Image 1 (cartoon, one colour):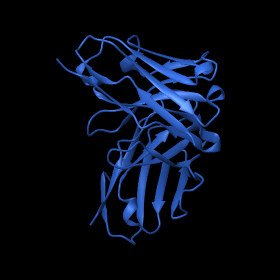
Image 2 (tube, each protein chain N blue to C red):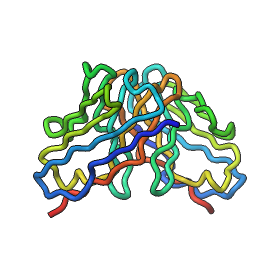
Image 3 (cartoon, helix red, strand yellow):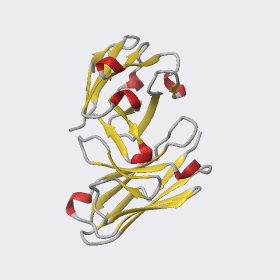
Length: 109
Length: 118
């Protein structure tokens, strides 16, 4: 089983600042099969990034994903009020279980 | 508009059973793989089960193997999760999710709450 470890657990930033979220895998994620999700309270997760760096249609370009192998990053270039939420990474490589990270909460400073 | 609508959640006693349903519309359900994912109160996301488009390949996370059964009916655009021998630790919001990650077309329902308590 691939374990995903996200850091930091909580990120306290102000609107307009840059957010950098990390997701580290216990073993290499095949074919960069890594997704990033945003979840707000009481809502379902929303897919932002797939294939480690491809942005879903309609997702603002201030969201970007990068990385390969075992180290992945989600960057939000300039935080807007609606971006304060919990972010999860998930690997969906060749073999189950398709695990999630424990989440990073981006909160208003 | 793509919609996945879960139903069937509720309060059940430990050891009991529930059957969750997920009705899909607005996308080609029959060609997409589908999954169930859950989220315990205040916790993170946990992938539970996968079913291929033709139901020929099925996977489960170890914690639900032998207790939960995933199935689908492509004629009815519906996904199911039969949950038996429920435990207190199965209390969570259960989401159906599916699509094609390779194209970025991956969809989630709004979830249904399952509470296991005496």
